[in-house]
Length: 473
Image (cartoon, rainbow, N blue to C red):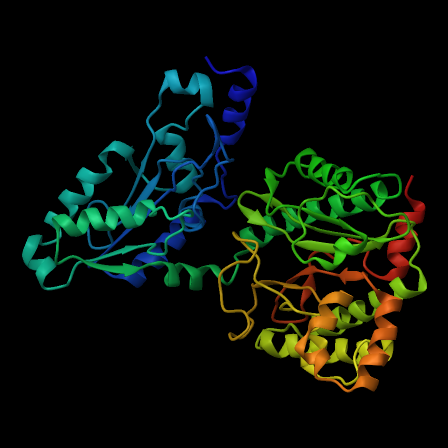
């Protein structure tokens, strides 16, 4: 028999994630996708299996993005089949049957009626019937002659989402179908779904805003906690307590709670070091609500006051963000906005002596990531946000940063190519600003008018940060 701990963890990890849009919106999304694949297309989407953590404990279950986007259903063993050319049954969901013996351990399984109410799909059947249904469907779709003519096309997510060398459930199913129907044509549905997901609906924007509001509250709680915390994990605990306390299911990505020199590590996640008195604290965090992510970063001084060097770096980053957010208008290129940030950071780094000329290759010694990314069902959501133009309804982050890592600068080919005099000037500045890392990240809604900062309630300017921290109990 399982231990009480194992049972508790299994129940928690088996809990489904449900997206927070009305059923009518899922119906409309499926109708649009059905239009795109046409009457000869068949879409099959499948949920991934639970992922084992160790022993008899699974990781928290997270539904596949596209299936969540089209149905709102968060349970494992769930599949969606769209058949636009079928007059009788244009869409079907296959999911778990009620199982009282299993539900004793893992919790209640939604009934078929509840699945219909949430997703708007009227035809709901047992997951055990999927294979037989698809086989009969292919026969009804014109049989072997239609398959040989290449008219019938099966659309699936063909990227392999599995790790460790395993083949995804979709690709296994594709091979199974190919053995039975060698002439069957397959197409990747992901590009169609990715294009649909770029622009968020009002319901999606509201859900992302909810996740952001929770995240902003967690940032404020972290700013209060840092004054007395001894270790980074105390800050992390405060953040993630706030997430759950305010109704978020979980984090959207592992929380970054970095103190001192750890602020210069972009994806620092161990959160085990001591909180350095007087040093900067960087918290890059995001709550997940109904499948949608927030992503907000703040950097603030443990003491509640920036010292001269910290303030200089902070205000350089703040200027880059403050001047690029207004550029994030519908019709603008995110690549151009990124390049503008690089130019502004270059001006500031030159004033600080950390570079000898305002050139992108020198700026990259301190700012070595993109300015932003799409936000939605993934923290780094779908879309080529550097090449494509911004559109109203997109949510995109703006996150400039400066990370002063003297050892890395000294090893940089850009630094080594400078003259001795240039390197000497930079060396002096590196001593002054060593191990200071600052990133400021906000979530920006693109509109037909001015862009809107959805996370602007988190203290952002030097004055706002210090005033909030000094007023904290």
